[in-house]
Each structure stands twice: as structure tokens, then as C-alpha cells.
Image (cartoon, rainbow, N blue to C red; front, side, top):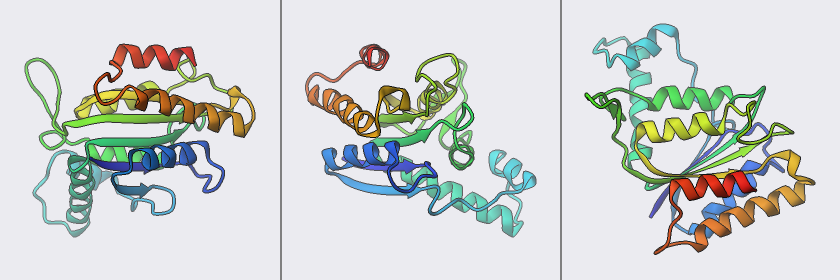
Length: 210
């Protein structure tokens, strides 16, 4: 087993998503690549280079080649992992800009997904993704949550087989209660392995019931 752990919380200490994400890493006890998009932000990309990356341009402009090399590296980190962990606080009802930049770098036609007559097909072949969503009051899964569903769509889009939601929202009580609830959700999911894993429908039911 190998893990790619993505953190995007600007809170470097006492972060619900960071603490619960690390709890999952410790529980799985596997080789892990940790990419912290706040401590080590991705370099800025120009509009011209962004279009070049997504069109797989063969232009030799140095800035474009640097961005393509970075995109290739980020995609390879996904390709090497069978478990993806994404810590995603809700900021103004959406994801952090740093996480959006990572998504823009890893979603590339012909590389991480391809188009077919049946629609897009993900190419990453990742076994599962844990999406840890935190908010200060926005109900996870509610009408104002534009994070958990969006990230689930992106994960499915690039080829994640199973998507598991962890609710770390502030509406669940004190910080200690929120962390404990998140850990219990993780424990419940992992208790079903390896012979009785939750289906996507069961996972959604668990997330909705918490």
C-alpha cells in the first residue's frame, strides 16, 4: 500500500483536517508521500502556461516546460499511490486556492484522464480516496457545501475507485469532539476492511448520518 496525503489547511496547528488526515496515515501505516500545499505552495502559473499545460503544448518556452515537468511529477505521485487523502477546509464555501491549483495541475487530458464515446475515463487507477472536509458551520453535504461533492467528482474523474467522506465540520461541537468524531468515522470505515469494504452508496449513507 502507498499513500498520497494532500493538506490544504492554512491552519498549520490544531487543524481538524490535518489531525484527522495524519490519523488515517498512522492507521494505515504505509509508505506515504505528504504534499503540503500551504507549507510548500506550488509556484504561480501564467495564463499562457496554464493553457499550454492543458493542451500538452510542445512549445519549448522555459516557463512552460517547468510547469509541465511539475504537472508530470504531481501526476506521478498519484500514479504511484493506491490511497489518496485530501484535507479540505471550506473557505468561502469552496476549496482553498492552493488545492485548486493542484487540481488544475493534475487534471490533464490524455495523461490523468481520457475522453471516450462514453465520456471521460480516469487513468490513475487509485483504489480509494479519503476526503476530509471541515467548516466553521457550513453543513457538510448541504446546499452551501461546494467542496466535498466537487472533490468527489474530481477523484472519480481521474480514476479513483472508492470515495470515502469524513465530516470534520465545526457544527459538530468542540474541537475535541470534532476530532474524536472524525477518528470514529475513520475507524468505522477501516473496520470494514479488508473483506467487507463499504460501497460508495454505504459510504454516502454513513457520511449523511454523522
